[in-house]
Image (cartoon, rainbow, N blue to C red):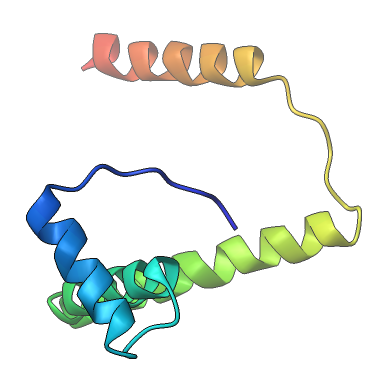
Length: 97
């Protein structure tokens, strides 16, 4: 899990603390995870069916890659060479047009 530091106005800090103290959450981390998850769901609900399908396909492809790396099937990549080739191909496409 990644740690993220944020600064809140006093009013919002008080709201978070009150939410935790009221027993709704065990701690501030749980509060923020819940809020961000709800926002994520809300954003994704606004996607069209096509966009949702693309998002699901992307998540599935990412999981395939993660699984491959977990099995030790990854390989080193020369990112400088990769981007140089992409830039060259882009330039060729746009100069030919």
